[in-house]
Image 1 (tube, protein in one colour):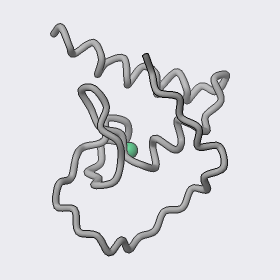
Image 2 (cartoon, rainbow, N blue to C red):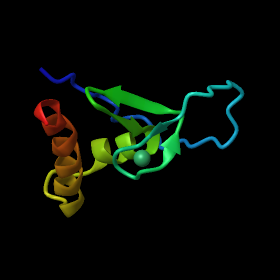
Image 3 (tube, protein in one colour):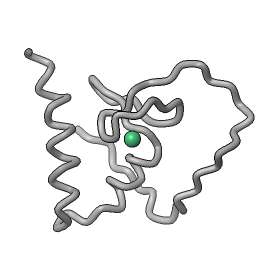
Length: 80
Ligand SMILES: [Zn+2]
């Protein structure tokens, strides 16, 4: 079961300066950048900005297929 993500009203606020110091950075599986803010899913990590983009991307959009593909790769790693 997937968690429903209702973030419709959230603006893409990207504050460059965050007071909290989180040394643990993870590599985003979408953009491939090292980020500290984001969500950890089953076998990967999606940074905040990518997550936001996925959520806002329409299913009909070409980008959506790209995101889904990226995530499939992660889920399929399970049995690799
Ligand atoms: Zn990212």
